[in-house]
Length: 429
Ligand code: SF4
Image (tube, rainbow, N blue to C red):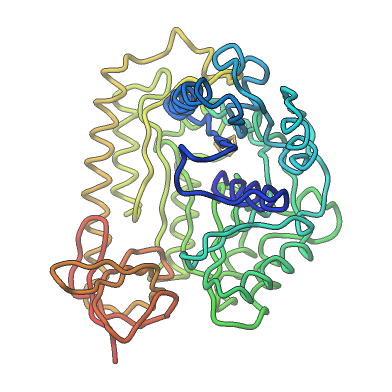
């Protein structure tokens, strides 16, 4: 989501004559788009601002801005840590940038943080997407109504707001015309898409059906799914639509029902297992990935074991893992008496990562001998040979050699070797 927001910010700035530079130190305007999902990300943002602050001492004309979730969360307090900042704007204020930029160009110090979004037709604004990639992101819904007890997103991104399907389909058509080969629909909870358009039958499933009708050779993905919001209609739509990848990212967060309840996740371990089995029965080569937190407040060793077992039993293709990090505003952040020591959290995280590596390898080995249709994303040179780096519809990374193929080509590749994080293969000629 932040990458996508940054592309939108770059687009708006380009209309004011700004051009992107790869040389950070030479920029006239530096904006950091921040994430506050964990304390580490917030700390990194402030450390970067510290470096820029030193540059501003020798170049006072340099303008510095901060946006994203840390800005939304800390508001004016950002200036207590970095008083030299010219511009602070929140997650709801990106489309106010044209006004905000004018203000800072006139040497005003600006802080624009609202709790309600600036309403606009997002297609009225230019988006600068990196042309050296084949994938383009399209936000379809922002915010979240779920209030998981560990998560700051509902506080920094607000309640769920969907974009109109006509607007999304128009953006997708433009993207395909520009030559992108894959679009990824984004949302903190994509399965909630359309619920705020009451009585209009606007759903993620129907949006996929609409996008699938766009002419051209391209693929569609969507992230992130909330387990209990995945409907049968969505699974039907994924099956019906040939352009939609057979890939689901469904964060489980814990393999223990008591911890799930403590996290305010609206499903049990058994319900999560049912969803995974329903999807796997429908799509044999599907990949299902997940997210897990190690060391949630009060988590016992037995409860943590349930998480390790779940990764094994569900044969998850990959899991993002993190040690629990207390966040401001959240319920879990106040469970101080139940906090586990850093030592326990990181020891569990290490075991989680070990399990993840083991299960990923097993999952990849299942594809040896099979043929996957892949999209070439980049090329690298190794020992004088050109290696094509590609991704299958189910999100598996596949490397192969073929001098006749280029970035953006779809190729059928027979898998010959599996490693923990990737597959190797030979093109079918
Ligand atoms: S569903 Fe995801 S974004 Fe929403 S509160 Fe829970 S973890 Fe945060």
